[in-house]
Length: 373
Ligand SMILES: NC(=O)c1ccc[n+]([C@@H]2O[C@H](COP(=O)([O-])OP(=O)(O)OC[C@H]3O[C@@H](n4cnc5c(N)ncnc54)[C@H](O)[C@@H]3O)[C@@H](O)[C@H]2O)c1
Ligand SMILES: [Fe+2]
Image (cartoon, rainbow, N blue to C red; front, top):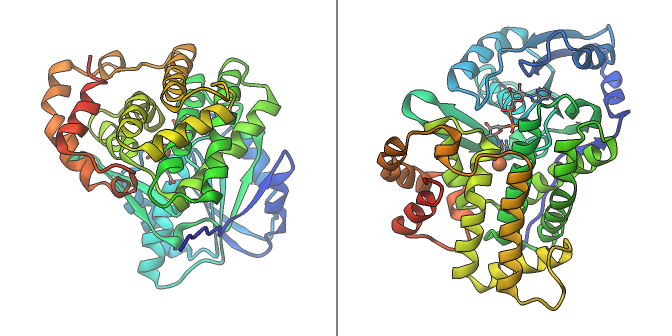
């Protein structure tokens, strides 16, 4: 049986924040990204919230949310006894809001009326997913929690909010969208519904992401990429992900490589590996590449997949992305020494079972070694 579920109502456009004006007499716990306090963006968001509401702001958000931050947030959350939670920011801020809500509601044995997510990066899709990725820095681990209960009730996509993102954040988070699209396309629970979203993700990102990187104020391109980021979130939250994310989580946990960049470094090698070992995966990658206009209609699957892989490398060059751990600044010896830990923990990652091919330890090590040069 195929399954596709959507729990989030998505509002997109410059007027999407007006939804906040509907909240009256509520107790709001607002988790906002650390870049937001004192910005016109946050002032604009707060100005939409009616004065009849009480608002408690938590802005101690850190990238790759550490468990310590969640504990800190829960201590503030429980006595506030919120009826509404709003998470505003990049994936880290939205996941922080999810984590605080998850543990906070368990502790107080009560739940909120509504969770609203307002993304300021076009990347993780966290505004529609049941995922929340937390870090344990002491043990160098990242833990994705997956609970249907974590899916936001509303996602407000305002393209203006992503325009302040630094170029590197635009590039890395956009390449995360490409990874969500390509992994969900071939994942074990993929179906026609998720395929449609994933193929469109490949199309939009390969055409519009470099424009967003070069011309951050191109509102039409920003809106398309913001919406497709959300759509790719819908795709992977139903179809699953794969070993690109399983390995990327290890690069984040051990070397602090930003999530989207870690995925992008590994993506060409994971696509190549899956295409070589699974005919269906190869055909699906090739079809998405043709539909995006990156390969001619009559072109064979393997050649089309090679086009896709070289296009990913090319986008990374155009957006100044380091393509190896050394180029990112990781010491070669340290990276080599970590191979076994990376492989062992990648196999334990919650995204691992979604991959269309079950890799051996040696296969995973070989993929990892491709980005150590
Ligand atoms: N929950 C999910 O479904 C899911 C899926 C994939 C990844 N993730 C997780 O999400 C996190 C990555 O999220 P991300 O890629 O959005 O990056 P991020 O949230 O870590 O943000 C990166 C940096 O950009 C800043 N920033 C964000 N938006 C900005 C803006 N508009 N203007 C200026 N600065 C801005 C942030 O303050 C931060 O310093 C990782 O922890 C990853 O594991 C979650
Ligand atoms: Fe991701």
